[in-house]
Amino acid sequence: MKELFDTVSINCSKLVTKSYSTSFSLAVKMLAPSIRDAIYSIYGFVRFADEIVDTFHGYDKEKLITEFEADYYKAYDQGISLNPILNAFQATVKKYKIDDELIQAFLRSMKLDLSKSEYTKEEYKAYIYGSADVVGLMCLKVFVGGDRERYNELKEPAMRLGSAFQKVNFLRDLKDDVEVLNRTYFPDVNMVELNIESKTRIIREIEHDFEAAYKGIMGLPDEAKFGVYTAYKYYRHLLKKLNNTPSEKIMNTRIRVSNPLKMSLLARSYVKYKLNMI
Image 1 (spheres, helix red, strand yellow):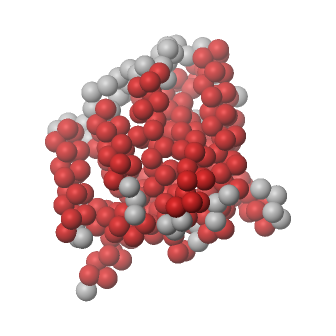
Image 2: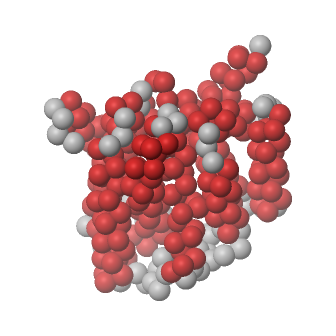
């Protein structure tokens, strides 16, 4: 009964999403049931790859990510994997015709985290594309259900939303990136002593990404619009909180949005959505 194993695989991806990100999990719940499982499977895949390079200290990370990549392609070729995360993802890739270039770009960026600690402007742009933009494009493939014309129309906004999310994460996770992982992603910025000018420039850059992304959210199919808008509103609020936080505090603590506030943002977003105000 392969169908039962496939269900178990999706449930594993769902568990990974809930365990690693309450915010993303909440946003996925706001998507239409018909597309939730595919998004869970994408998150499971990218989360496991990210965990390999970010948290599996004391293990051979290069070997693990290389094996993870090889196991994915084996799963794709065979149509099955005993790794439930890969089993679910390969099925989604095939069903929605997710381009392999997106997957390769993502894995390239993950591998960079194994050896690279600083980025030039061009390297930063390439890293953001691979680590975030392509994830937005994978999700977009699911959202438009194979409609190539709509995909091309929404491609740029989807990439900008992925960029915005990733850059907010960089700013939020500054302490761990610098002190634990020895990484600084933003080019030409002293992240160890982040000053107000640099922080303002970074936040302005993210705001521009959000503005471009919002236009794309409005063009999404109804099955996806509210869920993506929910994630957008959460990250906009997190950016606002980072903007109001002194630079030295960002360096010394991880800024969060409380669960009650997340629920409040969700409720307000839902009202706006139902009233066609977004």
